[in-house]
Image (tube, rainbow, N blue to C red; front, side, top):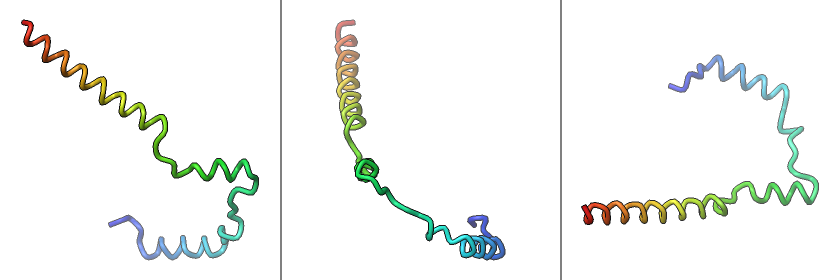
Length: 72
């Protein structure tokens, strides 16, 4: 159960219909703002490169650990 009773839903529905937030909502208006917003869904970049480096480091550490076991 989500915790939303029918009464609570109706109160929220009435509040939203009274304030009508969709009438005041706006998107980016300037070219700079539109450029920033266009990157909202971007997945990748630095985070992806860091993840790839982490995999490489973990692989090297695993190989080093195995090498040390062979030496001992």
